[in-house]
Image (tube, rainbow, N blue to C red; front, side, top):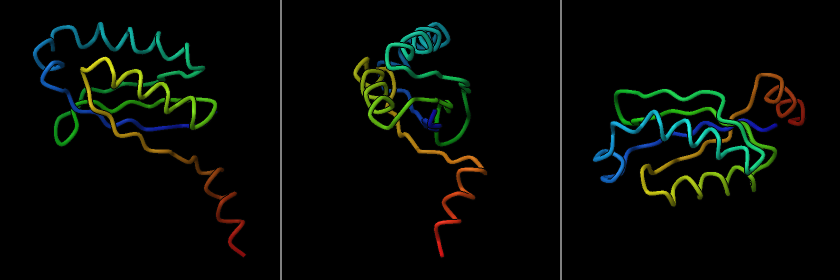
Length: 97
């Protein structure tokens, strides 16, 4: 599985219905399964981003489809980052001969 970090901000719609945010998070966690993905963690945060989530998906296409589906619901705008574990980064570095 590939790891992604999703940085999200509430849209106007999302903030108007903020009392449902934890219920929506549960629904998003369930929806991830449709794309072969798993939302392993979600945090509500202070600062530049309102939410930070850790997502695992089989590939970039699955992660992108999942992110687009969540964005289409209209409650958050998301920026997804591909994340590399220490072992993955060591493999990348090993290619730099």
